[in-house]
Image: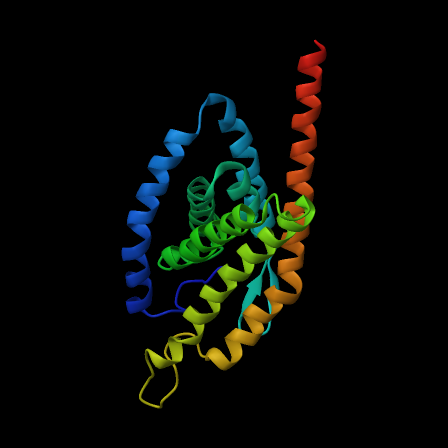
Length: 222
């Protein structure tokens, strides 16, 4: 789902940068306030997990690809601001070191896979917890987060033919319109990648909960 350099117009990525920079500054401050020495290692390991799973890109129709994110896991356990910052940092490193996603379009990727995914997943979890089975809530949180990210990516890519054409009338930037990007990008995440993200969220969060329960029982016994 990473958008590479050259796919979107300067007006798009500059506007996204103007929105993303203040959000990232707030997220950085909230992350510093929320994390201590004990939680840093745990957060780092989950961020590394997101880094790894985002590197496994599966091509999909419409000129892009799909992959899991891990946004809901971080958002549920640490809150949406921390999740958004960690995922944005991951996206920046991937673009800078591995060329996975463009540096010029980093802000778009961060807004989609960092902020939209984290906050939508967090809100779904906050709304549904204590109302439904935890497994269902975790699954829906993961599914919602990645679908929300795919909506932003699909719309940003799909409007590019409207933002610039050459003398022959061909799009300068991403060539496919919304009629292609919406079913290809959003559809694939609704049906496939959303399920993968949902199950991953459910399994990882429940595993962590089990570890915490076992640790608490050992402390009580000791």
